[in-house]
Image 1 (spheres, one colour):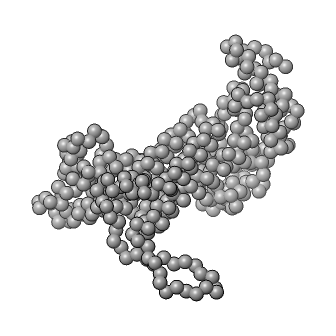
Image 2: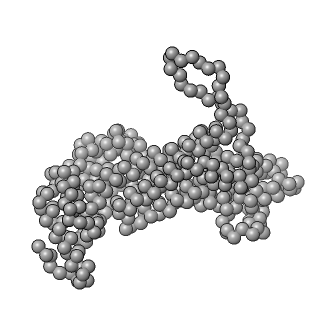
Amino acid sequence: MGRNGTPYERFLTFLQNVGHKSEDLAIAVFEILKTFGVDIHDCRGQSYDNAANMAGRYSGLQARVKDVNPFARFVPCDGHSLNLVGQSAAEACSEAVSFFAFIQNLYNFFTNSTHRHAILQKTFDDSNNDSTKTLKSLSITRWSARDDACSALNCGWEETQDALKLIVDDMTEKPLVRNEAEGLLRQFHSLETAFMTTLWSLLLHRFKAASVRLQAVDIDLNMVVELYESLIELVKTCRNDFDLFEKKATEKGPTQYKHEKSRMSKRKRHHDEMSDPAEVPFSPREKFRFNTFLPILDSLYVQLQQRCEAYIYLNKHFGFLIRISTMTSADISSSIVSLSEELPNDFDRDSLTKNAFTSLRISEVKTMSGVQKQPLI
């Protein structure tokens, strides 16, 4: 770290693929650090993406490193962790998987033919829609692309249907093409599709905005915590707004859920409880709410909460170092006590306190005069 507090990164080397098991990864990390003369016991932090084999708290790489050095605190990669949060939620239920497959199929259908793409573009040009968005492709690794794709579908809902109708009604089109267009159009008539478009448009837009901010060079732990807490509040609010999302979805046209055969709801009974032959089936609306809507939001909540807890812990012990100039003397002293207890072998509490207040006074002098002066010790 430089004198002005700017962190420096030092690249060591690339490693060949050592496998995906955390045990193999840990061995590779220990060996490469030994090769470069870096003592693992001198490390005070480790950061990876949030894949289970890397970030797993019980058997992941970070846990194996902490078994050797408990002071190597794990810092989740804040810049890309939201990708895995969204991916986990998108795979939480079959309806979510089908929805994103539908978006990709729409894009493929129109872009695989210049003729069909021209029809789509013409419907956008002829409409009074001020949006210039057209259908976009998904991305496996870049979730901001999913926001673009979902937003484009949401903004061009009617125009895309009009293009499909033109293809379905065009007798000069190949039967296979007309059949595919009819299948895609049928999905537009499903209330589930309209609901998912409305829900994911909001969620992905907020996630993209937070992700961009998290990747800023001037981001700090306090801001990271605030961003994650804001997303958690968003998810909690959305969870209670099923009726609102349903109302917005019906404004797109569809008014009914799929009329599938509902599975009977079953409740686990105690061993001494009499079974009730009269089982109440889920309605299509209830089935969608319990099997799709809630699992998506609950997955988001759990994933966000786990990451937020990690950042809260780090911010509690280390965050004061970057906002010390705005803290009271009592808060500084309390934070120093907390840090010295967290890393008892690294800091002498009295020396740390003296240096902290010296840095604070230097900052005050700079603020008042605009020039650097000698420390007021």
